[in-house]
Length: 201
Image (cartoon, rainbow, N blue to C red; front, side, top):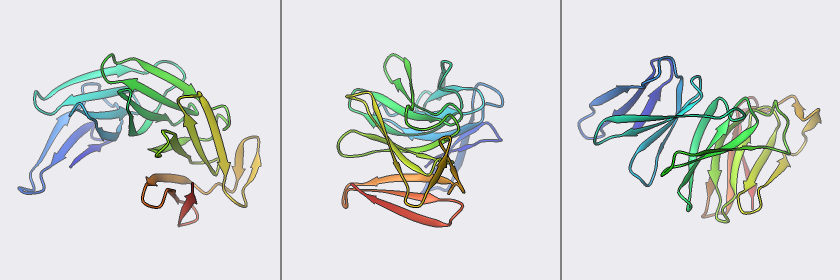
């Protein structure tokens, strides 16, 4: 199991059998490593929230590569989606964006949400069976998804939400998000209301 130590600036590996923990310094100091994703290239990819970079760690060679994020996609938070075109997707927490990095070229493309405000604070993401990339919004009380084939964003407000200038009054603190193919639903957590929600697709 791979995990980050955000304040320790480390990427760590826990071995289930030996219970040994090995940690590796992220090259950029105070980078704020956060999200971790094991991609099809067998590398460990992380978001460096404070350094505004994406990191790639080769677990065999024990080497790093870092990719600076262009303006508009700052504060990468979580990456949990890989699409068939070889891209990994991550949220931009303070930039209202959902962004991609090409695993082969390292090219980063910024996709700014057109349906949520600059203060929506995108957090976690997930991929549904139709190729839509969903992401939670900490302050907007919306389930939002991006369709790569049409370059279109769609936002679905949670029931009972009152929006003012694109930010929900009494935000629910939506963070966790996961697509379950067995029931074709998006499950999500709301931090401030202490519940788990389900949206049937």
